[in-house]
Length: 398
Image (cartoon, rainbow, N blue to C red; front, top):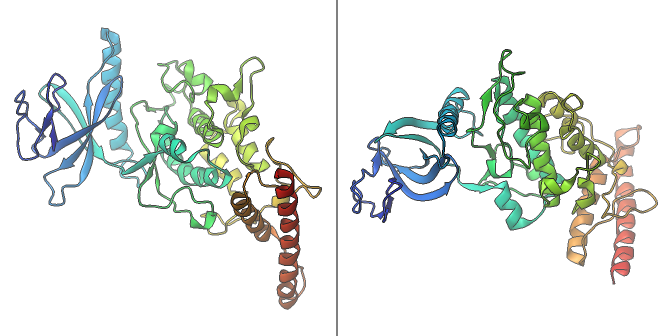
């Protein structure tokens, strides 16, 4: 299969063994090596195609971006050219980060500009949300722990992404995702893509008013006014998280009359109060009240990561202080009660709660043998409480 890149071609589909389009005669190979296979999408500034690199024996897949602005007007087209050029520049400047697509080529052919980059085989988080439903707390912890270092890498190099949203975060296929057990997390499987809206932040231009750019649902207020900051990316990532937790549009998660976020009202599973506080600070409307750097977010996040196998070794948090969402009930000991409605889901959530309590329990400060002897008693007590919760919850449901 070969796809003609001429936008005016009436029959762009061709066989894979020809070098020129059988319909319009356009050359099918870019730089004598990149062959488009099928279209992936089209935006305001260009078209995207899945392609193969025929210059390599394995013929690896790649992505071709063709500059093809749909907007009218000289100034608009000039801005489109600028954005297309700077995406190539940003990818080149960021080097070969394992979670940012590699820039393979950037050139002009037949009076059209092209950008070729690494193909990330997987689903973006918007697609994942549509396929599997709302994320839970564990999956959001995975997302933040995996993606924040990538964002920090960009910011250290003075790059503000300016368009962080679920569609621009891809989970690479072949690595376990959506895991409900933190110990099964595989760092490095989330990719930050589409740097077409990114900009270089310098001491001279950081306070200058520039172009308002980004997706309206996720963009920070100061960015709407053309003054994007590093904290603007943090805001967009925070809004992405609350969208994934609720499956609601960010527009529906903010009360414009009182200028407050109401995302907790729409949670579909319980969230730790500490994580909720981090998200609240990430999405502060006033930039000065928001996290100013990714390192600040990571510092707070590392205090609540419940698994010692994460990159930061910290003491386990006291998960008995977890506050439930509005859809979650609590017993008199302030323990979480599952939000599921059938026995199998309840058993799964109870097992997660048990894991949390066991990881947070502290042995007595006596001898090692005494600590080991006390562990079965702690386990037995937890089992009894969870079984009681299960019986009461199923009884109420019925």
